Structures are given as C-alpha cells and as structure tokens.
Figure 1 (tube, rainbow, N blue to C red):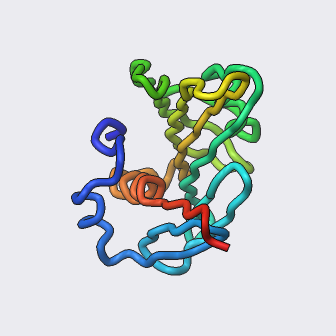
Figure 2 (cartoon, rainbow, N blue to C red):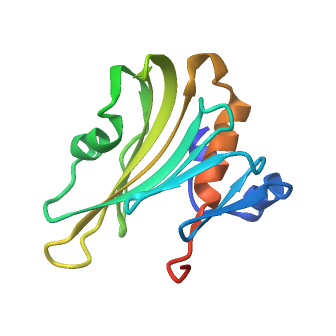
Length: 167
C-alpha cells in the first residue's frame, strides 16, 4: 500500500478525493472527506485529526545544523509512542533529492494501541551547514485500521498544499 500511495499527487488522487472539502489553516490548504477535520499547524508542518480525534495524518519539515539519521528523525515524531513494534520496513530509496524510508509500526499513544506508518526523508544538503529532514505519518487505533482508512489518511497528506504567500 505504501508504494501505491507514494510520490506526488496525481490525477487519480484528485479523482478519488474530488468530493472532499478544502480546509484552510495558517497558509495550508488541506483536502479532507468532510469539513469537520481538526487542523493544527506549526513551524514544522501540519496535523489533520479526524472528527472523532482518533486518526491523524501529519507532515513536517525539520531543519537542523547537523545531519539527520532515520533514528534521530523518527525520535521527533515517535517520542510519545511506547511499546513500538516494527511490522515491516521499505528498502532505503536514494535519489538526487536524498534518502527515504517507510516503516509500518504498532505502539501505544496516549493509552491507545495504534497502527501507524511513518515515512522519513533525509534530504540532500543544498546549503552548507543546513540539513532538512521531512516526516509524513499516519496513525489510527488498531481497531480502526483498514485499507480504506489508510488510503484516506495518505491522500490527506499527499494533497496538502502549503501556500507561503498566504497571510
């Protein structure tokens, strides 16, 4: 499923989410299945929380003056998750823009057993002394994990747009 949903948004993604509602928050436009999703933004990125508060789709950028590793980047988004068990991990993908790896996990977050996928990208250095790591992640309670729910959460992450010129 990770491989099917990876990459940039395509016409197929747009068709699957054609009836979705665009929501706006601090310069972000996020397409969600309904206008009742809760958006939260920070200098790192965006979180889209489902109406019932149990599922989340997130993306973030983490600037640093030292190089990132997958472990150090994962620590940024998994610090509140305990009992982490790896289900599977993709091969490391390398390109001119950097390296990316996806990991599917289970764990406990805020007392709830969750199922999650995290995608970590160690971006190639373009400015001396500046390193950027990017994270994309989804999670939901284990009891709500399904292919349909997973697809919905990934589409939210993939179709999110940052408009830096927005007020």
